[in-house]
Image (tube, rainbow, N blue to C red; front, side):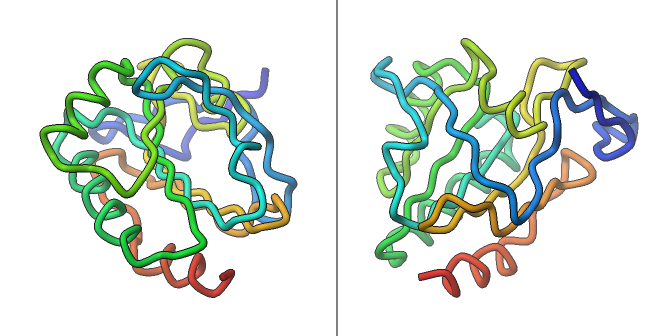
Amino acid sequence: MKRNSDLVTFGGNSVTLMGRLVKPGQAAKNFFAVKENLQPFNLSEHSNQVRIISSVPSVDTEICAQQTRRFNEEAASLKGMQVITISCDLPFALKRFCAAEGIDNIITVSDQKDKDFGVKYGLLIEELGLLARAIVIIDKDDVVQYVEVVPEIGQHPDYDKALEVAKALL
């Protein structure tokens, strides 16, 4: 399995991303995860629409919580688009977080069990067993159009740029 180093830091220290980092222009790889209700999720269920995948290490951290809240707020006005937040949090933690925060405009899924998304998209942090903070935008034809991997896990992604790209695909 390919490993990418020096792309991402955690507290200033380099971490290793497992798998091959997805790139714009590539076909989006279908992946399987687990929904809050423990039902299976796969990306292909949401074909024929623009998708924003918001990858976060854990919704139990402030920046991840802010990122999830921001995309939930934006998703209310993004018709024809699906926002998916994915982390390695347990489905129970995602359900608790969403209930407490009123998150109801996006889908939250857990990559904790199989790490299928993390490996297929090159975003699984080997040292931590968590996902890197990233945004991936996939068009209606299942082609990756945008990828931002945040270089320091403790920083925010460029929300405005991601939303600009996603809206242009509608």
